[in-house]
Length: 396
Image 1: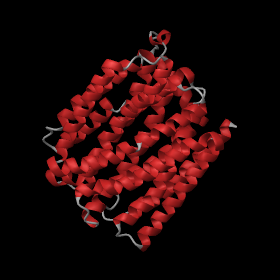
Image 2: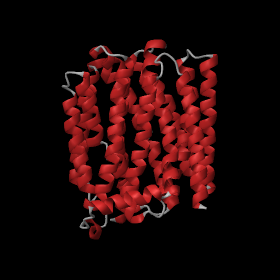
Image 3: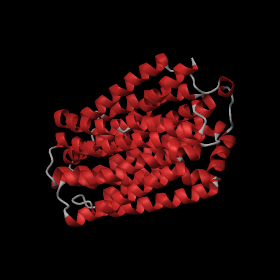
Image 4: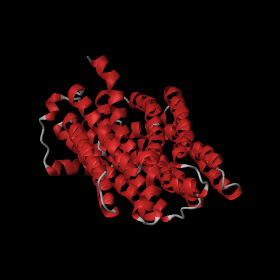
């Protein structure tokens, strides 16, 4: 039974995390269509994506903490029910205000998959290197979801408009709900599920983790890299479609270049973690991200009008993330034990808050160039390096 659980758990975690990724990534290519339909500026359309990521950030705290009290299975089912209902409602929104509210609620209601998946993973893989290795293996699959989502979203938008995307999101949530209802057992230990922490005790868990400098630094280091990615993603559809004049159905294939780099890097990350250890692997990944960010800035100055070159150079930045994310999270989660759900919720919340900030700042940048994005990428890598240095020093 234990061997069978260890087999399906990574698949479950990938599915839960992938649903949140599908929501944000499939919708992203359709932002220009949203701006055109509601006759609003591109910046205002980008704020709907920011609302979605902010909602996912809040959901991480909500579901992670509650899963430590009530168990993983009830929270997974609740998240999937809310995702399906709210995504279906977004199909019929009449105004941009309703769409923005719907995106936020979609993130809050259905965005718990990331934190719940990480908590489920931690229920079964206790050792730091085991967690890092499994996360690196899963990231090889998870990275395909944003790539597939961007391709799917751009083609769905070309065929049926942006509303069609939310219809598919609702159907995907319903399918996963049926699967989890039928096959997913409770992964948290039975003797712990009946415990009912008071609000004070729940807040104490968060307080203790937030006072843990090592945890906060290592759990949030990779989130600055995601800040850079979301900043790029917010600006990219407008630059590719309006400046580079790429057809919307082909936009996702340029995104696939970065996804391919992430996939290759994830393969080497899970192969090297036992040989190199987590700290050298993190430093290597940060160095690769910095090299990619500097090259991206130089490209904006020298030859800024080639969508293929932009995608290839940004792929260098993307390729460094798999060496940083699983290793830094594994070190942050080490020794958390009974706090796994709360710790996982904070990791997801940190990541999505930085994604929200990246989306928000990306919406403030000019939508006809990547200069501002390049500067933010460099700053993001430097912040990630600083946090890793502080966190590993605390660990020592």
